[in-house]
Image 1 (cartoon, helix red, strand yellow):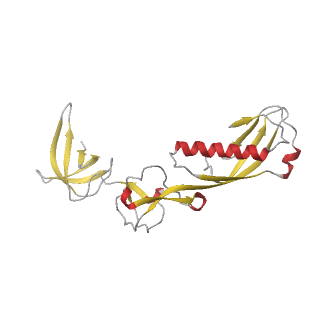
Image 2 (cartoon, helix red, strand yellow; image 1 turned 90 degrees about the vertical axis):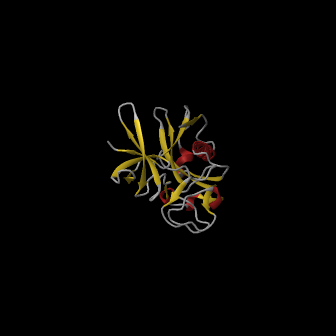
Image 3 (cartoon, one colour; image 1 turned 90 degrees about the horizontal axis):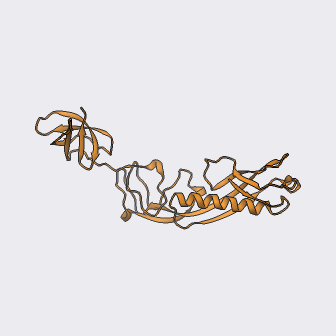
Length: 221
């Protein structure tokens, strides 16, 4: 919530734009955005110019605090005087931000790296499925094919497999103060924390085990 003392007959629109700019900057810092370009177009109702002057600091807050700070963002402007007033407003926030896109056609289950991705500045208002930003590319895998030049988005990504089908793994069995290891063969893929089927190479027994690290699983007691 932002507060500032000024006559309501002053430029409320300018103050509203600055509040929206500060909110966007805070979000960008929290999410490790690269430098971006933003524009702010405030709108206030016609009656705003006739509001009584506010003796106390006027407060600006987003009408829906959990919403993204770009696009069409509704705001509330409060005067806490007694009696005070509240008016609705909005700011059209346009943002161009470097986001991660496919450098080439990518395939389902492909593991991502900097060699197959690149940063491209795009308008966030057009990325309705979301986007992936930040200084480092995501170290994840794709859930479906992605054409060259298309942006990544959260629902497209999943954790990398730490264990892959038909690869040898180390099976850990823990007891009271001790750990026994043996060799196994993964029968399914698995990411960290997932349960997979593993064949114990010595006993030929098939067990359920939890993936704990690369090519390493922990048997269930």
